[in-house]
Image (cartoon, rainbow, N blue to C red; front, side):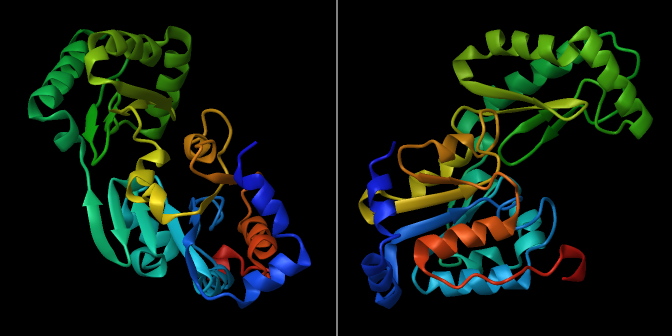
Length: 282
């Protein structure tokens, strides 16, 4: 159990709740949110009720958002997130905003350097040149701000080809074998390999999960950092920050934004809306 738990239990006492309700904004307490399944339904847009609730919450404490997607996708779901939150982190914090101003930007190129990046990409392309699989298409390596996405069949394959490769990969462990080889070949670069979806795997530096954003939140500036996320299980992309000793973790197990608001209502003594407008009606 974390040291903050005893303090959190005190929030349920009437005296503490009344005191909290009458206090001015406390920037030393931060509520930090995942996006999908926490503030929005998965891959949907945020409800107006949630935005209104967050604006009220922001009058009491600092609020922040940390998502794995880039800022363009984050804005599609939340609106102008850098202005809506005191702290806004896209791509797990590779792009960081405070009070609407960029305070940090990190890229795979900066981290690895061009020589190591070329070494990595050249090895992948050489490996694919020798790899015998039923179908190959195009876009075998997709370069992103914070990772490489590597696909043996190529991301330009059709839906049918994607499905067939998934079956072939399951039987022949194409991706699993390649990842094992890369872990040996590039042990010095301290990389993480994440197999996901049907046709590819991601390659990114160790520690570039959501805990990456915590470097922008100095220990001395916060008494409590509450993190809310839905994928808090082992292997989920909220797990590392949820279990970090720096955060008080709150799991949104049903991936329902209303659950998030109910938890916040209890913690910070704010009225919870009776319902949220369905995403299709936004």
